[in-house]
Length: 269
Image (cartoon, rainbow, N blue to C red; front, side, top):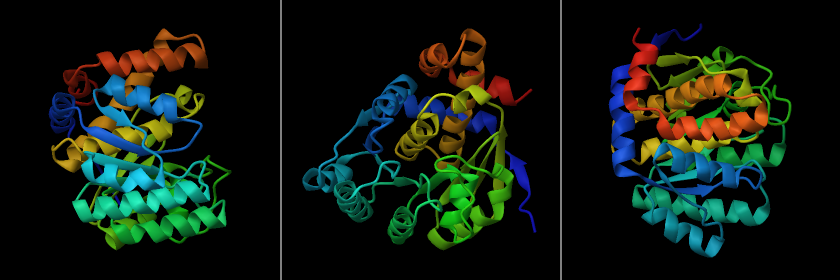
């Protein structure tokens, strides 16, 4: 049975975005080598503060101090896995919300087992594409590397199963982003295909989701806010750019200049 999706509350999301920018949460990013710089710039543009503390010896200490923690397994290796275990354990003890981005789970066995291990530490949010969410929930892996071969709505039941298992909010991103908890799902349509032509936009969105978890606003509203922000920034950047290179620059500009009221205007018509 397909989980029906409701509209998200754009006005509440706009308020949450304003709170995020007022607080400027400090986001500890344990992310992949390909996207680290872009992720930091996206966080800065949106009004958050990035920190890339990667050593196992420091990761736990910093995770306990940060507003939120991002764990992204895109270029997972054994030293990074050890740092992630230290950070997640410390975050769990300290009450620091943390976000899991299960990049390419289902396509590769070791990272799949690792991410399932981390679920025991109760992530606040899990953010992935449809293939990753289906695989993390125990279904057959359908992804092609880091890319999904399924539409986001195909993962709604898997997302609800994960939400019930972990107590997490599960965000399935695609042409429509779905925010799924144990009882309901909310959809945010929009964006542009250009977002798939620049490496790291999904990973950077996961960092924004971590910022949303660390800003003190209602979690569902804040996560909806950053998902909507990325979609709207992408739409506007696509209009202002000639190709992927100028789009990446325009995306950062839009993330930094869009106002909270723009979210309400875009989705409350």
